[in-house]
Image 1 (tube, rainbow, N blue to C red):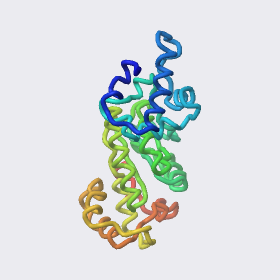
Image 2 (image 1 turned 90 degrees about the vertical axis):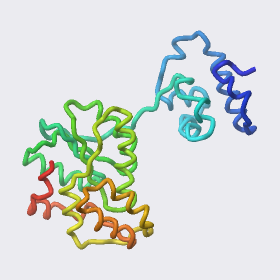
Image 3 (image 1 turned 180 degrees about the vertical axis):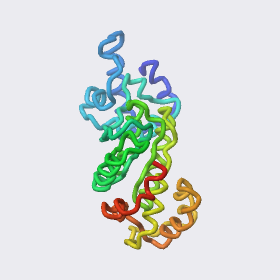
Image 4 (image 1 turned 120 degrees about the vertical axis):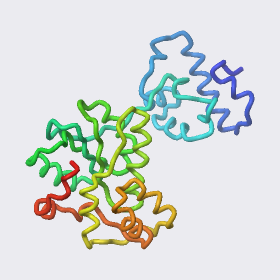
Length: 249
């Protein structure tokens, strides 16, 4: 007998493996019924370990049809997804947080901005795709009203801020914008390297749509020719000599 929270399971076609998963959840719901302490909302991986003896099982299950609309939710399991930590440094009193994809460039830009105070109050290390989830942590920072991002000019480097924008909007954060001065300076450097694969023209147009209109064409051309520009091309010496990168910060 399915509990009322899982009544939908009797109306859909399930695999044997899915039935076993739901049986495990059904037992947990039965055993915790009326126990406010055990049903307090806790982090997802803690709940996953409690129910499945595997802290990462819910990470996998939430991407399956068991969590399709009208089926399981984290709320059913009294769990919540916890965004990973966001490493950041306070360097001023301004309302902008500048998120930088890679660690060496994070160190370089943080050091330079700390010497020449502008509107950047925080710099943050995005850590590649991790930022798609850790962006929600920005909501805990005081006074942030502007999120700028600077990453590699390649397929992944442009996907990351666009996906992070979805999570940012869901958290009530301002839109993530490109740090235009940095991208513009990056495109001026002749330090192209080979990407893993060329990007189809239509996909390239989607990727560069997030950038400022003035640099979309050269950025798209870069992608479709199978090239990339690593943000490390805007290194310490260049950024110290050419201050144009900081005009929108």
